[in-house]
Image (cartoon, rainbow over all chains, first blue to last red):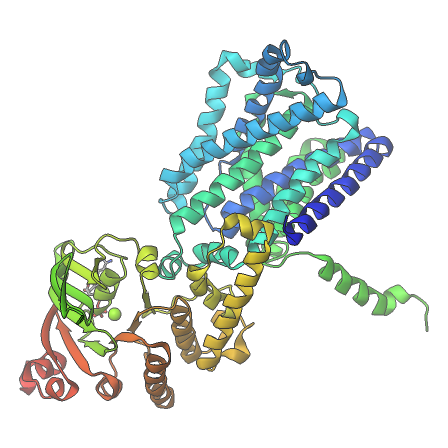
Length: 346
Length: 271
Ligand SMILES: Nc1ncnc2c1ncn2[C@@H]1O[C@H](COP(=O)(O)OP(=O)(O)O)[C@@H](O)[C@H]1O
Ligand SMILES: [Mg+2]
């Protein structure tokens, strides 16, 4: 095997190990309420970074991301509660309740959910990404609603009641944060690596000027469809994790409001900034919790806060910059040099 | 064995030296024939001018050549291959690059990144390699970056590699468009009014530059330009377009004394 590949694999394994340890620590020490909010933030951030590939980086305006989220959640849950039990009669290693069985089943659910969402993305994206701006927006919005209405009317997946009693595979072995933040890291890493390559630049070129990008040999349709499919796959994976953490799903969880919220996160993030999308995912998920003491006025204040953020930072949280170790290092240096922090050094 | 002088392409007999052959091409917009039965050819290594009054259809000819529009009638062949109906990215891959009359840089990308997008056409490694940052992909990107920097150097833009493209002054943006087109390593370069908005000094520099690039990169150039001094100064052959039709063809001397051309440009009373 090539040395660089070994390095990558070792890096991923090391990262996974650290994340797993952190995950176990968190689940044992964090209060349940904060833990739940943290997991929700992670799922929201994954959705935001995956939509960022489509909206932020290739510049398409998709506002039906909850549809792919739903497809992933339902297909993953369907594996665990509908199909797996049938197979488990013959295949004992699909047993749930033992750690290796839980992990294996979650992985299978993730693959099914992500692939189903990806294929749906291909079917929706291939014809519609030829459309421009507002048409694409209307079409994706419609798609999200179609998915919701279908789920509402298919009795095999519980209709309006949805699917419940999904075993909580995600938290098995205290690994919930591992799975959720692992998928967030994967999609962020994918975005980062791609954007550091000349191929990634050709994706940005599609956002910047489609006609010029085509003239420079960029197959814009192909780029847009690829971004759409990858973005949908990670939304699907987020859906699988949601279903197997909260143990129940129903069509109303995947409504238009969720799509709008994910789109808002990407817009708030700035143009194409993945770390900005993570930040926005956390802020927009945690803010309503922070405002909980306001009772009925909670969502009103939340909306007002959003408007204020948009007005004061129209370029988004980070503009087109990314947060990295470098940013923190610079911040740290500046803090240390500033007299406010060095306190009464005089 | 002697190489054949002619060969049969998609549109009939062609000479080997013909790089680009446009055969009775038309394009209509509603009732308007923006390009009406235009035929022209560009030989390998030539520097050909395409001139005509505003609205004559020059830019539309470029859009037809590069696949932005498909012709309603007629055929376009490049190196013996039919281009009709090919999408612009395929046309670019087959060796035709262009600049735009209304500058179309990628605004939020840097100067170097703009050129890298052009160079990406020559990348062999795939999406997976980019995501995994494979060794092959990184060394290829490093090579392409080096090539792009040397192109920038040729165009006197090398000190500006990390500037945001749209922060450059107008003349440099035009040169950056040329750099980006060159990065695709084209055989045929289409320049749409490259001197528009430039001052006399910049225009003079551009004349020298275009000729030098032709030598250095072994290019064939088709050039739209309003500045007669520039066109007459560097083009070997000139086509004149008026109301979508070619009204004259010839060397600069023939064109500048052609009464029809003078009429088209200055209005009939003059002649
Ligand atoms: N996409 C289009 N739709 C409608 N009309 C067009 C389009 N493109 C060009 N035209 C028309 O075709 C004619 C030629 O335009 P153009 O090729 O831009 O002229 P030139 O570049 O010679 O100034 C003009 O009358 C213009 O309005
Ligand atoms: Mg024009």
